[in-house]
Image (cartoon, rainbow, N blue to C red):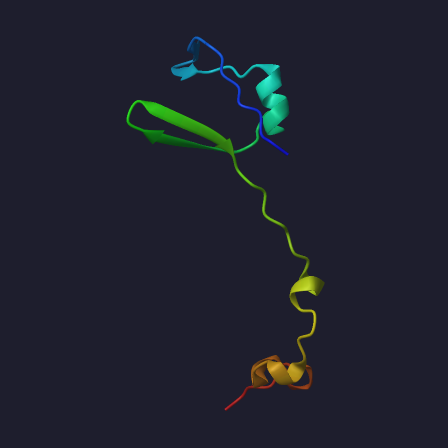
Length: 87
C-alpha cells in the first residue's frame, strides 16, 4: 500500500512558554496518533521530521519462560533447593 504524501502550510502557535504546531485531522488519522502518544522529532539543518514511535510488544512471563527447564538454569534456581545456601 502506497503511503500518502501530505503537505500543508501551518503557523507556529504558543502554548504556555513553548511553541506548538497543530496537526490537522487528516495527518493525525494517517499516522494513527492520539493525545499523549510518544513521537520522535529529528532535526537536520533547517528541517525537522516527526514520526510516531513504534510500539514494542509486551511479552508475558509465561511467554518469556516457555521451554525453559530447571536443568537450563543455574543450581540456585532449582526449586527443591529453595532456601538452602549453596557453597
